[in-house]
Length: 204
Image 1 (tube, helix red, strand yellow):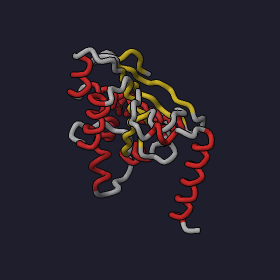
Image 2: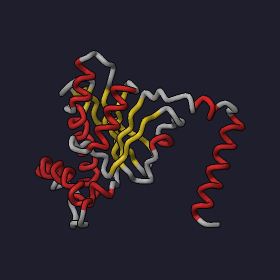
Image 3: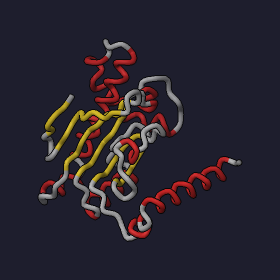
Image 4: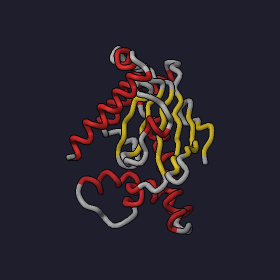
């Protein structure tokens, strides 16, 4: 069986199993979405958002990119953010990084070339910002810490986007969470949380 035929077979099995458990599932799903969460995570195939937090279709709005970055000039990310905050009225924005992130590792290694190096420049800036405090760590620990610091930096970045600031100023209930996912355990840890501009509640 070809790979694409396997995809269609998997899809059929999945859809039929859902309908067997909940006959009206897809009828209800087609009526619209009201997710409470916006997940901004890494593109890594090992960190599937719905499975990691055990939520079904329609319960989480998702944007992913290499190394889970929030870049103000990234119109893709900003469009997702605007739609989630202004139209879906999500109550929680989750920035989720993960240990063993290839993007974070590549940002301080040899250049890959092309667009990826330009994209990872922002992670490299995080490394340079904290270089004195993490340079003495063993390689694996340094990379783990850089993954954490990158998440914390993205919480700060998104908290300074006008879309989020305007939501807070208008009294909209919105919390930004910075999480890290451990591939070895399957567990999440909260590193940072912000409920209003420049007021993180906890930071690792």
